[in-house]
Image 1 (cartoon, one colour):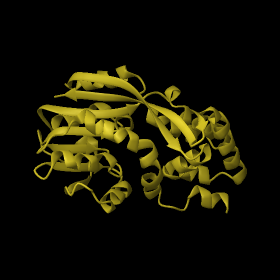
Image 2: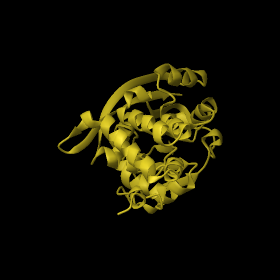
Image 3: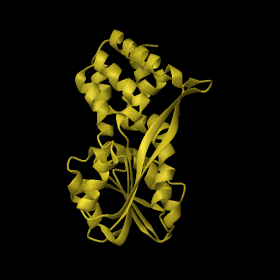
Length: 272
C-alpha cells in the first residue's frame, strides 16, 4: 500500500474528520460541554461552530420534543456530514450555514448557546461574543470550551515541531492555530467586555486515544483540509520523516493499547 493511500489525501476531509477525529479527540469533550450547559426540557439551544454535530446531537434528548436545537457552522462540507447522520434522540435538528459575526437569528431567541472549540478561530472574537450574547435571553447561558496553549498539548506540539522541520513554516503555524486562546485572561476579558457575567473558567485535562502515533498524525492531518493539502505536496521521504519524528516525541505516551495523550481545555460558563 502506498503512503498516499494510507494518508487518505484523496478522501473527503470532512468525512475523515467525522470518522477519525470526532470520536477520538472531540467526542470525549462533547458530553462534558453539554453537561456544563445543562440544557433543560423545552429550551432553545444554539450550537455555534457545530462542525459535524457531535455536541448538537447530544443536546436533543435533554430538551425533548418541546425544545429546539440548531447547529450552525460556516463550513458547508461539515454541515453536509452533520445532515447525513441521524440523531438517536428522535429530535429534529435544524442545520444552518451561517457566520457567527452576523448570526441569522433575532434577539433573545435562545436559552443556551454552546460552542465547542470555535472561539479561537473567529476572526473578531468580540463581535462573535457580542452576537452570542445578543441572541440569548436575559439570564441566558453560554457554555464553551477552548484548548489551552500548545505547551499543554504534547501531541499537537510534537506534530507542529515535525511539520516545521519536514513540511513548512505555514503548516506548523496552522497547527498552532487551535491554541491561540491558551490563557484564561484571553477568554475572560472579551467576554466581560461584551457584557457576560458570572464568567467561570476551569482548566481540565482528558486523555485521548489513537491506535498509534502514526495513526494520530495521519488521521489528524487527513481530516483537516488545509494541512492535508500542504502535507500532500511534499514527497514521501518528508512524510516518512514527519511520522518518525512525531512517533519518537510521543514514545512515552504509548501503552499496551496504543497512544494515550493528554489534552487540556478550558471549560467556560457565563450568563447574560
